[in-house]
Image (cartoon, rainbow, N blue to C red; front, side, top):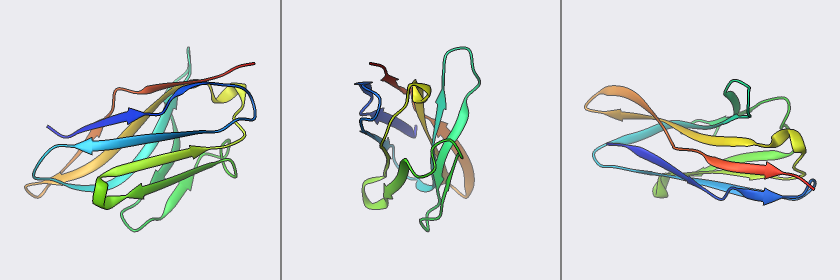
Amino acid sequence: QVQPVESGGGLVQPGESLRLSCVVSGSSFSIGAMGWYRQAPGKQRELVATITTGGRTTYADSVKGRFTISRDSAKNTVYLQMHNLKAEDTAVYYCYTNYRRDSALYGSWGQGTQVTVSS
């Protein structure tokens, strides 16, 4: 079982920063692209940022210039550094990873971590 586990969420005030981490555990697999998604109450889950094994990144327009995704492949970990947080960033943030095992490609979601931005 390949399982991403997120951490780092919490309650912050507008304008503050947070860093989310996601560690992928399991055995006999190789990680591919990784990403962060979020889901606000009453809304659909949306893409926040992705990063390939080569370090190529993509971002949702709403977070460009404020969020940075990075990864440490040696630690099977992906990070999301969030600056200048806004109330509309409030959501549950989910980590997603593609991985390969026995020549087949799979995907796995984490359980999510809550980020609340409020004064």
